[in-house]
Image (cartoon, rainbow, N blue to C red; front, side, top):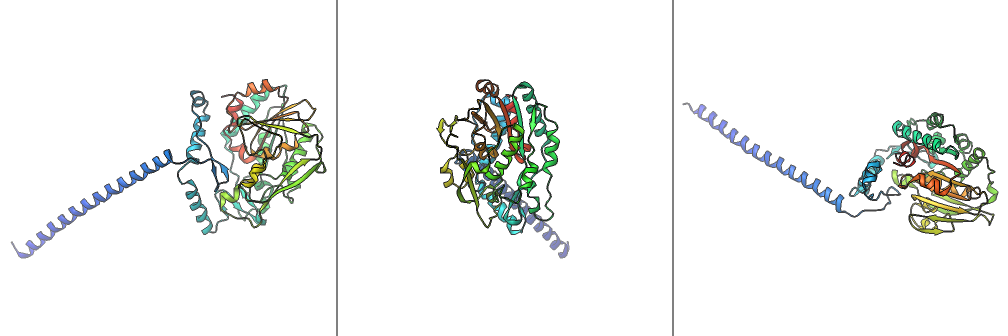
Length: 403
């Protein structure tokens, strides 16, 4: 056996031993990574399960979903599963950190859109409008029409307000892809039962687009925007609307930074102003009953909320499952409103026209709606939403169907 052959054979054995060691090291490395990965997954599960639960997100400027109470009835209704999914997402461990990472990344990339919010002209933040979920809208319209047929002697109305991205589309950054809300509103309004009158406020809002009808940093309309829509509603509901001269317009905050600023990370140069409309007629009084909270008050405004970040909550203290408002109106009529948060600053304009106003927010309401209709002798029903909420809503149909 030649020396060259022996050397070659030794080299082959050495490579085999080396490969064998490398294989063992690689195997150990993979096992270590797997164990580490499983550990982190287990850690996140534990933190998400036993970590502190929050009720409000400063970053998103909104109330977070709390853990829904379980019952067999709620499970079969379907709403429990949806609310539980929202609860797990909202209470994900260190949620604000991950949102902040996303926002800062978008800003570093000089994007004009962050987290579904456009950085528009004239210091406006505009919430993106996505194409409606046809299944959700179809279920809602079917439920609304069925409800209208069931209560055919009750006058019913629908006001779905376009949002700022539609009315102030000229403020959008160049080439921003935007679905036309009005086309969908026109389409769906034609599918309503004949007992439901659709209140089209698009032209009204467009006529006043140069005024402060939307907040710059928030997705809500202002009290002024709500006032113009109230006057349009009065034409359809056939009552005489009040003029702006009938109110004392009071500035309650000039430092409002709304949900869109929190959601996107963009800062507006000037803070938003929050105004409230106080009737000059001293006989226009109310008693507001927050049933779930077992609280009564003689005002539609919660001034303590002005000390918090979300100052829009000054209107009715934010959202509640059900609120009952007794007024000094002699109309003798009861109005039931199915609503989102757009209704909160709208309701003050209705108190002189109805003896009782009942607000139901389907996102938080679980009770029997037929019992409510019967016990309260409801005369009229109003669906009051903004387009973004209505087109993505999954809670209205189950409430109307008593599911």
